[in-house]
Image 1: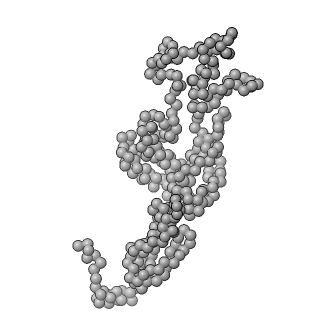
Image 2: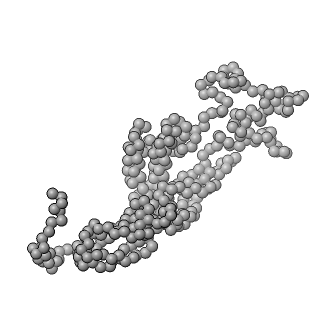
Image 3: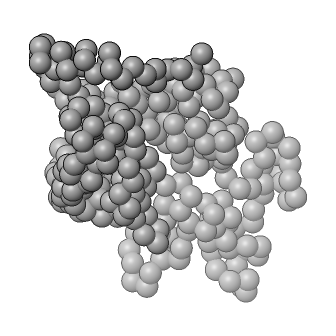
Length: 324
């Protein structure tokens, strides 16, 4: 992956606020739902999210700047434990600053060479990655584990789900960079930015455990619901006569439409709360906030205009008097 600062288009000295702003602009621009005809949009969106996970996190950003982790958040290999990167000799070091060992092939008795055995030396150098050969095994008398020198076999993909799928759960098909396709169960209650890990579904390499598949979930914008934490918000169009006379109107919810009583003389912008009609949350469910919007009929209506003129002349009022 590219340098996360380069991906987000910010300098290394950029403030946290500048990084957050850059991430939001890029995420909105490259969101797969806004680029449905671009097959590379999902990959760019995933790269932007991965970059933000590094430099958008204060601790990870410091680790990256110090060279302790790479652009994917993986620990960088710092060399063998016995060496000194500055060339200074440590305890037991030989000429030139390299640590010296005395090899022996067996125990400390006759025929042995004294000092630590070969396995101890390899364990010291490879962080416990060398193990004695299994009885009857052929070839080299030692086998090696990948230990601390492993390679990254994880795969990262982005997946967009609808709001209904995020709430209720779903089964989606995802295509991996390798060309392989998998059916993935999306758990109910998944949130935007959450990662789903499928163990052993990443890349493979001889002598290594298979990597994992990491799926970063994003929730597509809904046609009329707006997500506000665990609450939902929706604008409800109502007629002029419904606003004046009141009445019952149907309101959409994620569980199906319900009836809402509109009181007489309801102004545009008035908000009603439908308890428990929002998103699942710890210990319960959020609410749905419904805001009325008075919508006039299309085109000119002479009867309505005459009625309003008569009403204006007989009942004048100024709703903007508080604005000065």
